[in-house]
Image 1 (tube, rainbow, N blue to C red):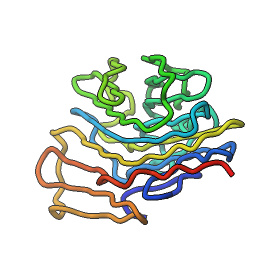
Image 2 (image 1 turned 135 degrees about the vertical axis):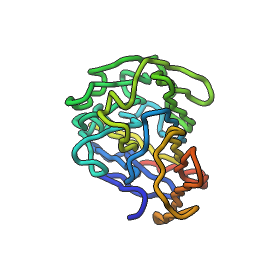
Image 3 (image 1 turned 30 degrees about the horizontal axis):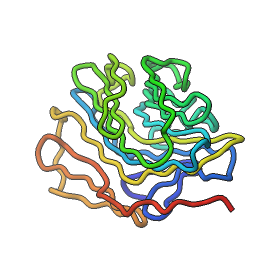
Image 4 (image 1 turned 90 degrees about the horizontal axis):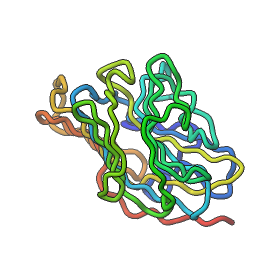
Length: 239
């Protein structure tokens, strides 16, 4: 599978990547871009997700990591959001069950991610179900999180120091436990820092993933990776 690697229960459904499924318990899922992204001199990502129904569990997380398993890394299910146990990582977690918050977890090099266990910033968010757009940026040692165009979190996090390298695998994880929800990623783009050391590649490389198209464009700095826009996810209902 080119460009993206799906791990655990992650699957392609209706031109989106589904992480969890309402009515199916004890799921851990992840998907990663298979080429490490530069995170040293600035980093940004934007993704759209849909979570249904309201009141389900447990959420999802955007993860930047240098785990020894690389693009095969996956954590545990339930409130761990498929992220707990991944080493050398930073997680931006969107927790939909009980905690109902958005948080940045940075546990440090040599440690594994623990959602809720190494929080450097958090904010209550009770309306995380439905369709939302997330933007995460890091510049000058400050990590910022915006939801639907509104900045909700800001914290001092040097990504290169936090993950133990100037490059890292980036991806999205999800999980549910005894309660469940359907969580899908509708679109995703990543933009590493502008001082990325370039290697010669064709002007554009299109990588097909079933019904998805993952685009890698290397013209001149800044380097871009991302998905193109896809049709809106058609919600699944329990039954």
